[in-house]
Image 1 (tube, rainbow, N blue to C red):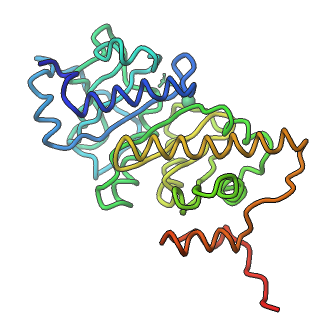
Image 2 (image 1 turned 90 degrees about the horizontal axis):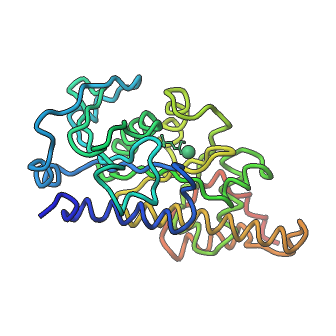
Length: 281
Ligand code: 13P
Ligand code: ZN
């Protein structure tokens, strides 16, 4: 038995390969973190290094993540290589009792450190864990081309992005009824963008990074991958429709129709993103 045969590791590795297959991870683009369940930590513990790496301060802190363990992609590592050599491209991190530092307990065997976006992942985990009463476990950052393209043509507001995406495919309002947040362009990889993103993640389970990519969150790999996939596909449809129609959208889903979907599928849409109901004649 190898650590890579443990189901949680297999699921994590599969998701990295799936993201590569979708074309969302050019070079070292994107990163994936998973907050492990205690029983998964115990399954993996026999494979941990005899000597863990040194504690490294993150520049961000979270009380509700003290002592947690995360699986994380390595900084500068390529998603396409994760299924081939997980031990060199992925690591397991332990968080200290102050909730402000990590150390590597497994992986990155040829050297390296966790993703440069770990501060963003960490704060997003903290706020999503709180917002979902502990359900949320996955934070996923990718560079899907169509969504990034939209950040050049739509106003950079949550309302504009959410409405465009909701109306681009009928099931979108069911998959992300809360909409998507939008972070303006910022320098990636630090505490500042981490704080701005996590502020939005208090309300949204996905946040667009202008001219950069998307952060998606969820309770498991399938849901989180599915959210990324659904948002990117909606962006692709919107771009296709705009391109084929030379910028003219002849017809789209009306706000009343969004309300009808929400009613029948039992979801609550973020009401402030819908236009007012026209007065009955
Ligand atoms: P890392 O290689 O450090 O994970 O960075 C990739 C990325 O997408 C930065 O936003
Ligand atoms: Zn990125």
